[in-house]
Amino acid sequence: MKQFISALDVTDINSLVQKALAYKNAPFKDKGLGKNKRIGCLFLNPSMRTRLSTQIAAQNLGMDAIVFNAGQDGWALEFEEEAIMSGNTVEHVKDAAPIMGKYFDVLAIRTFPSLKNKEDDYSELYINQFIKYAGIPVVSLESATLHPLQSLTDIITITEERKRSELTNTKPRIVLTWAPHIKPLPQCVANSFSQWVTAWDEAEFVITHPEDYELNEEFTKGATITTDQNAALKGADFVYVKNWSTYQDYGKIYCNDPEWMITTQKLALTNNAKVMHCLPVRRNIELSDEILDGPNSLVTTQASNRVWAAQAVLSEILNSGK
Ligand code: CP
Image (cartoon, rainbow, N blue to C red; front, top):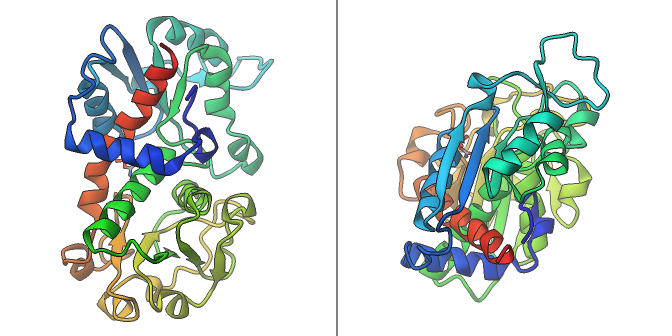
């Protein structure tokens, strides 16, 4: 693996999942793999889980991890080619990225979308500029449109749960449901989950959202899509809850109907589904306390599995550079 930006960088999802689960069983079995290697983790936006799990994963492999809050502590970066830098940006990515390429063996980056300029966001301007100029493998810690480490984690968690509950004979029904929120959020997690679950091809996959919240078809091809949440939830084995803002009329909140929050009443429609969310979650807006604090919630397991997803990916990248 030369980079990790989306599901398209993975040739065999199940094998990567098994690799991650093997690290969960034996975190330090490849402690020598990253000896004298260094990962730079650049955050242009806030993070808790991604930041900590990536550092732990790197350390488990014997790598040094340096975290740089570029959005907060670094010079304001310019990403446009041929920009006349007379505004607020101080340093061009084509000057900064090659230096990072000299300091580090792997560069991991978190950027968010503007939610203002769909073309820029969906061209993945920021992360692609780092890929272009850093000259070393780049790992996405969430980009403008995708969150691949989260999605790999989600599939690891579903795989584990299916094994635990002996659900492995049939394709599970996985429902991705939109939920209300107070702010317009990126489509990254929903896009990415859809991309990974359809590429994985081991589930009956349903997406449900109110009208006007259609996602980019590039990521949802192969899914059943409905605006009837109750019908979608019927018989679900896994319910993935996430808010996203509108894609067509980009970055807006249209309907914010509280009826779309996942509660115990909604859960009663399912096949005693396990409930997933990438976190952070707005309690009693997206998901009720009863669900989050109850036995069907997988959110803590999901977040803890972030370490093994990152470790499997870093291991693939280190091995391919040998
Ligand atoms: N799920 C996730 O990416 O969490 P953080 O934003 O805290 O990293």
